[in-house]
View 1 (cartoon, helix red, strand yellow):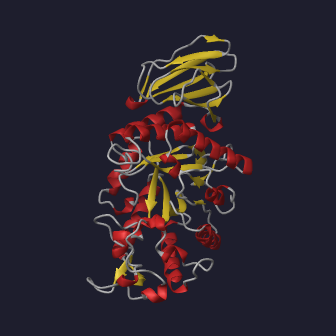
View 2 (cartoon, rainbow, N blue to C red):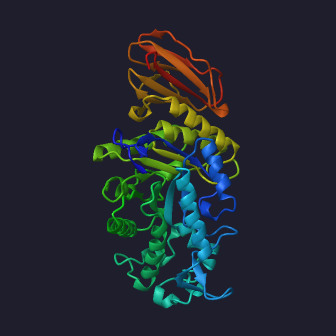
View 3 (cartoon, rainbow, N blue to C red):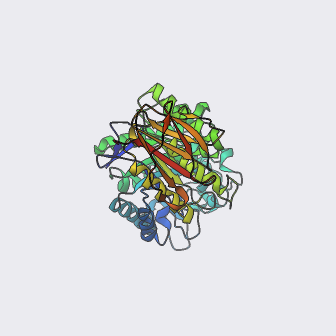
Length: 439
């Protein structure tokens, strides 16, 4: 079962033990892919245990959640498509059997604009249940969903109050919860990068908590906001409301470059700590791929590791082409991250910092520190820094991250409570684990 780690609730606890969640996958709506079981097994084989479960049907070969009145007819929003829910239910069963954590996203705005909206059962042109006039929905939307042309996301009483639409939205959410609510390795996120009014998110947060209360089961819930800048006031709706939102997701921060990416994440963590209580911070979408425009492949790998060294609780490579998915590079770095963090004795007590690093240049190195006991330092592309430590005897364990390979440990000399840390090679992804000889 997934819950907050009581020793440090910035992290998750799985079946009573603290756990850093790591993931990557070829799709966001994994339940719709044909080789699901093999893909999940691949993830587990490299140390992964975290996937995204977007309620989405816009890719080729997908089915929609509602049933048609006949093979070529309109949808009936009172009836659900058996094949869709067979896929979804199997997905929850298969991930649970492997102890893979699924972060379900209920409303993905990209299914409600442009070409996907042309096919969506909620489009009044496509169903027998309401008209455009009665629902307040347009039948054609050509703009980016960020422009908020679709009134679908304003059906609640606090916005446009469209009960004829809202009842079918609730029915869909109820069907999602029928399978997923109360399952041991499921987290919930209301939307995918929404910029709708916070009232939309508040309504669904309260609805999910009500349903969880009725069934007497725990619920871990967040919202994902669209602004890339974590200082945008809209993010306050999540981090200032720990009763509704038991964790945060800052995936959009992965549009930030280099040191700014790390510092924004750490700053967000400090805001949560100041407001209290600490809560896990997830990043279910690490952007970056040479095949697309949201950063390079190098950006993706750096962001993945910087998230870990910023103290995040869960990190996953975004699907191709906007991310590395579960390709060879993603596999290598998930494997390395699991190997490296599993060897740490004090990961869940360490604090993200650069204050212990001297002679550090911009984006050169990042640290997790448990002073006097253990330190970890990540180098995005080689480097040479001095590490400030408490007095004592230390060992340095180097890992070449691109190869998931440990080097023989070194016993460095300390000078003025500092350890010299030049990477074994001048370039490449490296991480050093520095701990007292006594461990």
